[in-house]
Length: 379
Image 1 (tube, one colour):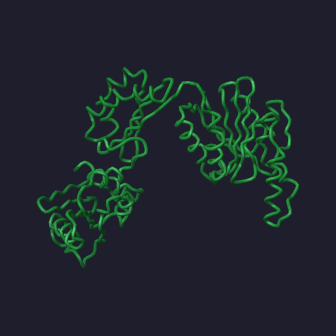
Image 2 (image 1 turned 60 degrees about the vertical axis):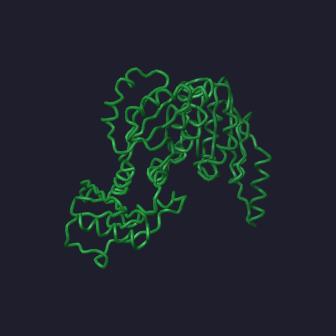
Image 3 (image 1 turned 120 degrees about the vertical axis):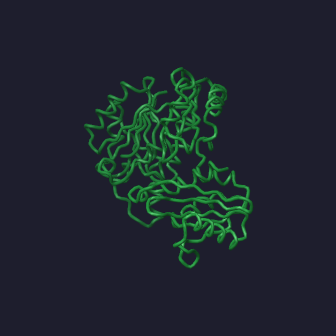
């Protein structure tokens, strides 16, 4: 199944809202092994939309359209689809009753244009909207599928997951991906280490992807079942980890801070002179063992900033460790373009540094991610 996702709405083209529906649907369809080939965003123009639909039906076997199902004049998605498919629009009585009941419950008069939301393409399977008024539609015609979903994510997401997904799970071949996540190694280094595997790839495929101070390797297999896909992926995954496994911290949706906390086996506290507490917040979210005991902001009250940076790191990490009575104290400080990180335990003191200019430091999460990578690689 080759799927094209078409997001309808001039507000998307104007940058007034982000196309989060496209991202959500790609992830959702990928979970059941469906292949997303193309994303398109089109404004509220019926002629252009008609062209996109007609061209899409020539190139893809499934079109998924989001948006344009509401009651206003610019909501023309289903009208345009009906025109392309040479179908009529008919009133779905269940949807109409739901809309009428909604207005009665609110004590409001229903304007005539709201009846438009109950119109569906003739012959379509209606997808119930439990969080709004406009129903979705699933249309099959001439070995093609056309799917219409509402635009608001609060309506679209549950409809896609609960109403649409069961209709798409069939006997087609399954595509399954596992994304390996690495920190502390660059994309060019990864590609160099794995070049022979990448050049010989068949099934599964190997795709290195650059992230924020991380590198991902997406392994994608095609087989009859998800279990068979995993079997194909496993030996390639093992070979990759044999070569660069020291930088691996998890797969798929595992986060950097989550992996750091999973590896942490001592109580810890943090003296933070760089991230304004953000590093603590990210780590605490995954503190299932309650080992992250506290944080202290950098201040002249606690630290003599005229001493050497190593002495400041020793003092800060010892101070916060003693204050919270933890087995490990972490200190994060900076001098000009250098960020310093230290870990202090009963038997050991380690420090490291990385350069980060002020202009780069304002980028979201940059310092935080570098600190997390250092913590991860130290364990």
